[in-house]
Image (tube, rainbow, N blue to C red):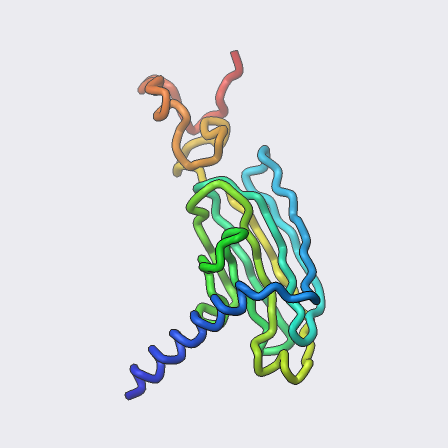
Length: 178
């Protein structure tokens, strides 16, 4: 019986997240975080307040293979976030089901959105929440491989793609420019 209740709760959370993601609310705010192509790691700390049915979106353009990490600290227990590709209502991370820490490997190049919201129970009472979101983007590099060997940030040594790998080269050292 407890398992059925848990399954029902998870389904309702996932369903409500999808419905909520498709709503175009007039009181939403949208921010763009600019990620640098050069950095192996880039971080932001966002501190903000959300109230009622307001929705906040933080957009980042990411490359396939990078990892997006979010640590979320809200003052209201009904304050959550989802991570989804921009324009796609299917979330890669659903906060109400998974909690306040996300670590998502990005499946495709493109814009991704961290959407912050209050659950309906708190939104309809016009509650508010102060929150801090620590957002980190990590370029995926092969273990022991220097990032200069993965210019496009997909986690694969560039020489693998063009067939130029040489067993005499130490790929843990920076790439020498010609």
